[in-house]
Length: 247
Image (tube, rainbow, N blue to C red):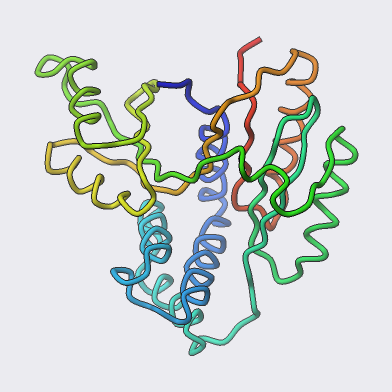
């Protein structure tokens, strides 16, 4: 097992904050539209894995069905609207830590310049495609609530999850983070629910193979820079490979 990623927590906190402002629906809708377009117009979530993930996430934030339907229609070309596409950037943070920045944008050059400016000012740098991607493993991530420990202890619950054939499990404050092969995300989700667990969320993540231990000063600089990256309007995800510690 490995330590819980602070950036998973920051991501969820930001999404909750955006949800309160109503801004999250725009990003969720865009993710649905892009998932349909990148599949060549496949609008059935059961036949389009990325669309299923995007719709599942939209439901987690109580996005209305009409909004989801409009976003799917937009992806098939029947809903009109501007052309948005995914753009992924790779680079380096202070201390040499790796960062992958996922965006959805209507202007890749503008987004690239915004990211480059932030990285340069914060002591990092923008790299070329493939510069750091090999340091991460794409996995399905499921946030699972702890069951009644008077019936099964935390250790017993953890072993029960491992028996499902997952890649990794992390104990967090109010439950578990389960990692599995991306294509098995919904299969594992169903099996967990069959066992009586409540699955709070399902998503795809980029998990570092070997987390980097940065000196305190460099780590604090990296923390500040990542938080600024999260504030960019086109941002959807920021993945880092350094260890997060409480000072």
